[in-house]
Every structure is written in C-alpha cells, then in structure tokens.
Amino acid sequence: MTENQIQQGHPKGLYVLFMSEMWERFCFYGMRGLLTLYLIQILLVKKDDSFLIYGAYAALIYLAPVLGGKIADAYLGYRKAVIFGAVLMFIGEIFIIAGGMEMLFWGMGFLIIGSGYFKANISSIVGKLYEDDDPRRDSGFTIFYIGINIGALLATTICVYVGETYGFHYGFGLAGFGMLLGLVFFIAGQKHFIAKALPPSEEKLKEKVFGIISTEYAIYLASLAIIPGIYFLVNHNSLVGYVLGVVGIGIIVYLMIEGVKGGKVLLHRMIAFLILCVFNVVFWALFEQAGTSLTVFANNNVNREVFGFTLTAGNTQFFNPLYIIIFGSIFSMMWIKLSAIGKNPSIPMKFGLGIVQLGLGYLVLLVGNEFVDEAFRVPLWTLGFLYMLHTTGELFISPIGLSMVTKLAPSHLSGTLMGVWFLSLAGANYLAGILATMTGGEGDGVELSAAEGLAKYVDVYSTMGYAAIGIGISIMIISPLINKLLHGIR
Figure 1 (cartoon, one colour):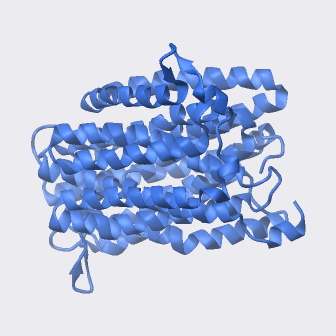
Figure 2 (tube, rainbow, N blue to C red; figure 1 turned 90 degrees about the vertical axis):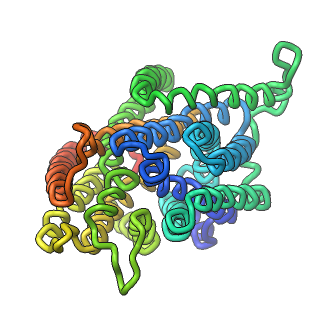
C-alpha cells in the first residue's frame, strides 16, 4: 500500500455500503427498540417471558449469518445474498405490522433468515474493498460502524418514538421502509463494489438440482422452507440454547480442521479467534441488556424528563448510537495515529480494555442511586453515563473485531468466519435474555414495587459491573499470549 493510495481516501464502495447498512440498521434497531415494550404492553406477555423471547429472536438473528455467510462464500456471492436478505427482511416487517403474536413470530422468521444473508455478507464486502496490508482497514470499518449507528440513532429517536406514541404498527412500518431504502441504495451503487461481490461460479449457480430447478433458486426456496422452523424455535425459545450449543461445537471442530489443513499459523489464528469469540460473548451478553432489562428499567425507575419533554422508555436507547457517532471518528483517527507511532494496543488488549469500560458503566448506577427522587427514579444522566462507558467499550471491541475477522480469514473462509463472529453474538444475545430475568420479573407472580425494583437493579447491575472489570483485567494480563497466536495480525 503506497502513500499515494492512502492519501486517496477510502474506496467509493465504502460509502454505498455505509448507506445500505445505515438503513438496514434503522430497520433492525427500530424492531429492537420496540419489541420488548410491544410484547409487554400490547401482547401482555410477562416480563421474564418477553426477555426470553427477545433473547431467542436476537440470538437467531446473529446465528443466521453462519449459514448465510457460508452460502454466499460457496454459491451466491455477496451481492445476491445481500439483496435476497433485504427483501426477506422487508417482508418480515409487513407480517409484524399485521399485529398479534402469531404474525409477530412469522415476521421474526423472515427477519432472521433475511438478516442471515444481509448482515455477514455486507461486512465481508467492506473487507474485500481493502488489500490485506492496507492500514485504512480499521479506519474503514470504524466509518462503516458509524453508519450502523446513524441508522440506530434514527431508529431509537424517530422509529421508536412514533411506535410508542402513535401505535406500534406505525413504528414497525417505518422500520420496513428503512429496509426498503437500504436495498435501493445497495442496488443503485453496486457498480462501486460489484467486482468484489460476485458469485464464485456463475455456472455452478445455473446447474440444475434434480434436473428441475437451478441451484440459485433452490437455495432461495430452501431458505424460505426454514422459516417455519424459526417460528417453532421462537415459540419454544428454550430450544434455542441447545441449537446454539450444537452449532457452536460443530463450528469449533470445523475451524480446527481447517486450521490443521492450513498449517501451523492458520491453526494458531483459529485458536486465537475462538478465544476472542468467547470474550465477545461476555461483552455482548452484558451489553445487550439495552433492548430488554435496561429499557424496562428506564420505564420503571428512571426520571426521563429533560427540558420539559419526557422521553419514552425506548427513546433512552438513543444514547449508544449518539455516542458512537460522536466518538467513532475520534477513535478511527486515534487507531491510525497510534499505529503510526507504534503504540496501537493489540487486539486482545483492546478487548480487555473494552470489557473493563463496560463494567465501569454498570457501576455508574451506584452513583445515580444516591440521587433517587420520591418515586424511586434515578436521574436520566445515570443512563447517559452508563451508556457512554458501554459505548467507548464497544468501540474497543466491535469494529476492531469485524476488521480482525477480515484479516484472519483466508479468501475461501471469509464469509464463514464472519458468520462465526456473529454466532458469538448469537450466544451472547441468548445469554443476555437469561441474565435480564435476574433483574426481577414476575417469577413468583408478584410485581416488584418501585423501591424493590430499583434495589434489585442496583444489586444485579453492580454485580455485572464488578464481574466485567475482573474479566477485562484478566484478558489484559493474558493478552501477550493471545497476541502470539495471531502471528502479526494487529
């Protein structure tokens, strides 16, 4: 990579993908911001059950890219996979708009399969825009990550507010419109990245399956046939944990086999990757209380009035994407500056520092608890500072993790490894749903009072905080050992 190439800035394709991902995330975070409240307030689902439904849905959303990435690698290519995924997600929102538990679960099925094709593969295209030794890669992924969070900010301020204020079906409808916009941007700007997103073999896609239908359309039909199975799993969400366990074991075996085939360096990198996936689970299981217990906490025990305007409970999720937008470009430049002077922390060290910051965020509640009002509500700034520390922790992990995957993956494993990264997020979200039930649902059939609820939140969140700090420090201590397994990847 020459100095002249660096000065040219980022590839144009990055900004097309930025816009596509931004609107897809508007769809995703609109759904995320409304789901728990919709389950509790409209469908009258108990809090604990709503947390588990949310956790199962979010887990499957992140599990699906394991399949979607593999199919794109082997057959469809990234462009066709992303377009198919976007269409399915738009259809899913239409089902949800129809209302009721049954239509919600069917809509979730379409959203999950669609996300499986969209999410892993659009990230893979971003990685393909850069050469292996391009120092702009981390910066590019951080810019891409800002796009994600602009979509999330729009969703948590506009989409969620409309849903909670004027009717949930309007909020879900806006989410679907966002997905449609993302698809339009992707197709309109595909000339800037299409060479990096083509199928590995057009001839292979045209081959007939059983002499009846092309491989490409057989894949589409098979994907649709999975949706009833997704519907069943969301209905019986405890089974999702077993599915994740089986898939996780299979993935570990598969990556170890690929590592052995590829030689010592690749094997070591696969081991390091799996270790970092475990740490990724820890971070996101604690972070992803935002869509469940932290939203209910905001509804019950946070004074949401600011300058005479009262935020909805779902609106409080806006802090995270706002901070990403504020700090994202700063972090993007910071990594480049630190690399230039040889002071950029290693990937494992960044993970440890990120988890420590997450833990400190939860401990902010101990301070906010000293300023409780007569209704047992903490000030809004409590959530503001909590989410700020969670966000800075996220910037140490999430864009760096995405960039790491594209560096680690040989070309034939690019989509697969990205899918495995999202599998770790699947496990985290499922675990997050279980952890959320610890904050005090209706396990004994009795709703906690405001005072009892606040005490429970303080106890659970402070425990999470101390645990995260301990884990983060442990990672920092062993980071040199993990870094050796990466064999020069930083």
